[in-house]
Image (tube, rainbow, N blue to C red):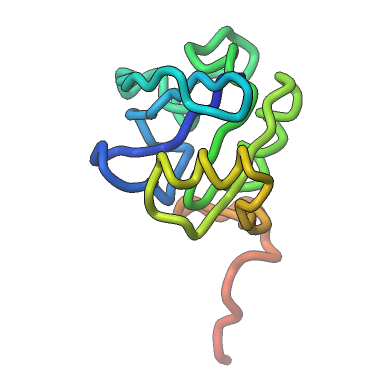
Length: 128
């Protein structure tokens, strides 16, 4: 199994998966980590910048673990057969080991607006 973990600083799990460009990719066999490598992507290949309709360097992973991700990215991963997990765990390797033991606590995805307004219902009410 191939598990990618967001880690922009190469030490801890990154919260914003859509903008992350550095991922630890763990290869596991029999619930053990057998290989770990760092994947560094150019800005154009971050999930936020790349097209969901084109191939992506992380298309061959089984799981993506992040500190946070929006519902759009979660749905994009699902369409490619990738399970997205959000965790409060900070250590990438520990998160993978907890997942392999079926002990990783996961959170629900958040609704992200990235500073832009998608409809009138998201605009704050002005006092009259």
